[in-house]
Length: 107
Image (cartoon, rainbow, N blue to C red; front, top):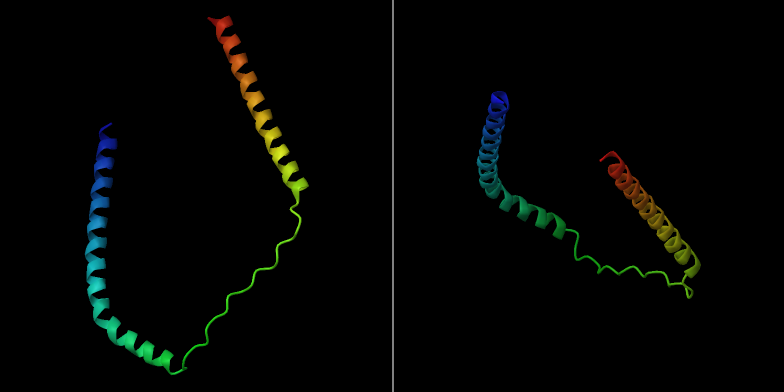
């Protein structure tokens, strides 16, 4: 029991230390990245503007939907799903009845 408490306290201490280190490092990295981001963004904007104005994108046209909905496969899949659910429920019910009978006999 004592070893479990020691390990638990050690794990909590390590987690807190890691969280503090990550928060400290991410703040320093963000401050350094903020200084460099502006000139890099301007350089990238100049590079992309050298290509000229882009042409507007056209949205792709979806294929036309078929006139008939395949009702037979939909109905068959729903029926099979219901059969699977009902078979599972029947098995659970039988198992509960058996357990009740066994509990009454052994008591």
